[in-house]
Length: 491
Image (cartoon, rainbow, N blue to C red; front, side, top):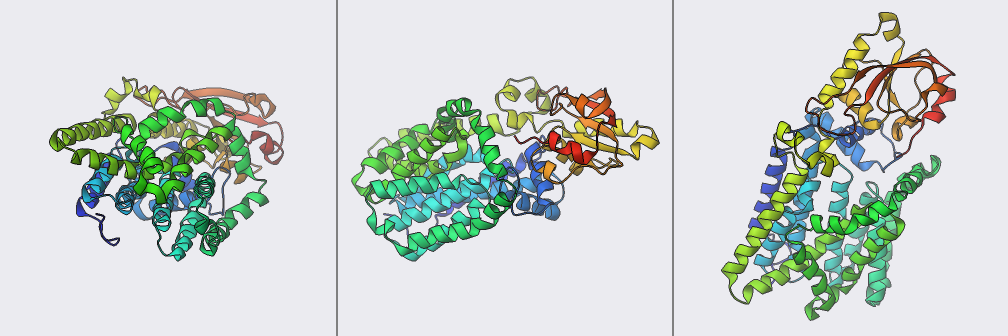
């Protein structure tokens, strides 16, 4: 028997709260990820869109730093809260699918030790995207079970806001449309409220669409760059599904998918069973990144909790419960080891983890990076320093210098949205260049460049900046305005 809709069982809230505590406890252990700093800087240039994403995450990131100060923890509070909300919502979906209180707790625990734990550590577009997917799926679960059709308006509101964060919700929309047609839910397909939801979502998404159109659709260029790695992206789909669902709890989500397709009491939600695989299939076909449709796992975790609950009820509950507990603990520990900064820095540096999970490795060494560049600038003759700019290979390097540096000349980059913020002033003719050259041949831009330092993160962790050169370049071949188009990179 499911609980009344307005109630959430308190142990579910406790699981979500413990997840927040764990995430915040490790939030500052290594340092910023480059993308996090980029979002903050981008948010300080308010716009209806950026080269590589809609505006929501950059604006939230900049607001977090404005309120809480410049620190990794400041930008990671919201992701931790978002994933805790996902944990609660997955338990609520279990309830609305007919799950008992025990099933709801099983769902919450499964979500808390899965890839949602990893997503709660970093500030990225993924956190709000996963929350939006889960909210939409929950609302659709209720609607397919006969809830007030006006609830579709809330679906449109959530989807519209979600599209201002990440376009991947389009995969969910396509999956749900296919599922509703294949499941013959003509009551939904013909509902004016469902079509009103699509209109609301499009209206809320419109500012970003207008910005994209006015700026030459750079996100389409970005998508084409990502599709250039289609083979690698496709190869990662199955391993990511396995890891994200919890490496030792993956059978629970798989059982949930089967239950939605086959169980008599799951008949109202067949359309959602279709939506997840269709969304994933579209990602595979288009060559998108493997995680683009991972948000559909939420409903299968919730459904799987019902299957496991009934399995426990068939006898030997203590033994089976112990097996679930061990699997959950092992999954959580494995996910934490791979994606959270749980190891001391020196131990982490000597392990195989930096090569296996680059996102964690790229949180190491930013203070040393900034200090190296500051040293190069300080060593310039006063006359050159007054005419200098810093030009970086990547937005991560530029953003680290903007947020963590002091006493530096103006900082520029040709990477993604940094390029749109314009070239250096004409009188800045001495360049401190950081990182690999893009394009590779600098001789078309400067008369001379020489390396003066190398980046070292002090632990020897192999990441995007380790070992890269810091150069000083002089003798511009042309004006910055003329050279700037050739320095643009979208990746």
